[in-house]
Length: 436
Image 1 (tube, rainbow, N blue to C red):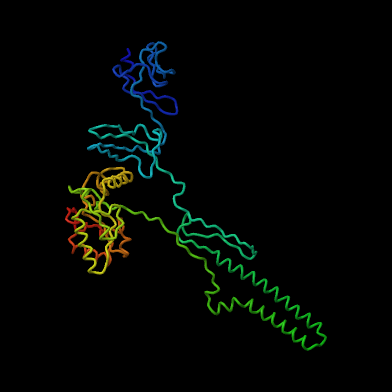
Image 2 (image 1 turned 90 degrees about the vertical axis):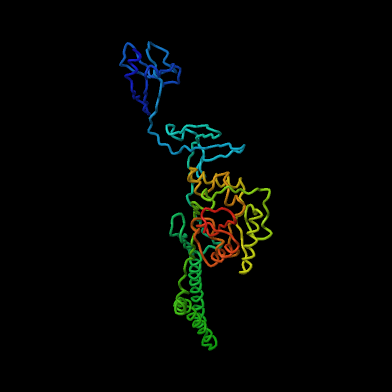
């Protein structure tokens, strides 16, 4: 009877916030009724059409025939805002490398933030272990850095000076910003001076009139009074007519403009797909770190590891000599790359792209050789030129000017090969998969 009852049970909807389905509830799939609360279906033999949830931690009370607990699936309307990311750890020759995991713009969260039904399985195979991390995007409270404009406070308040707020053409105070404070201050001072000048002129005019009245026919006092009256009237004319005078001399003198400031825009540097640093430019040649030689004695450099093999340094010496013939100096920005540095670049690529095959288009896999790992490759420009500021990203990979052309002439004469698509990357007596 148990088999007959359960074989007819496909799923049972439960009246709750979530919808619960039970399936595969056949006799061979039944498990013992020790399970967590409210997860088992109770089937009554006397009333086979009645199916209920067990209110306790098992189905072990009452007259029951079957306690179905197998294959429970929860359907929910909950929206999950986080995603599962696979973190892979691989042990090769006693070296452990970690790939994947949460990206640079994500942080690990508790598993309840991710959809449990979408969670991939963890695995272990041949020294390669995977585990699933629940990663949530880092929500920035400020999408962009907003320029803050603080209204200046006047030490001596003047009622004719009214400062207004700075305005910008873009959102979050981006684009062109107009700052009117200096122009408004000059205008306010002029208006204030006009008022003070008018009051003083009126006082002098009245003083001249009073002096004339009390002169009692004294010619010298009358002359003095006339001078005061004439001077005050002349001053008023100049004061009031100053705007017209300045406008006639140069109209720009009467047009007080706001200071215009262009806010800097964020520039995203895009990596180069299938560039010299990618898996597309690997070989079997890895430099022996114990045999590397320093290059700082022959060239200016900011390389993290300013070293090359003896062969690489020989080629660089030739290039330096060719550069001197043309009256220029070389500047090396990158030379040998250590295994640790390569691993660091790889981890950043994995965090950015979340896919090893995609990451390999931008950064060679850890443990690979060739390129900078060979000790016979450099990134270089002509020192002090504009081209040195145009290196390292997809946006400038095809940049060219007279200095770039001169560099290519120098490196070719010294026996170096350039990697196509990157004007700055050269390799010396080293296999290159995309030569120019």
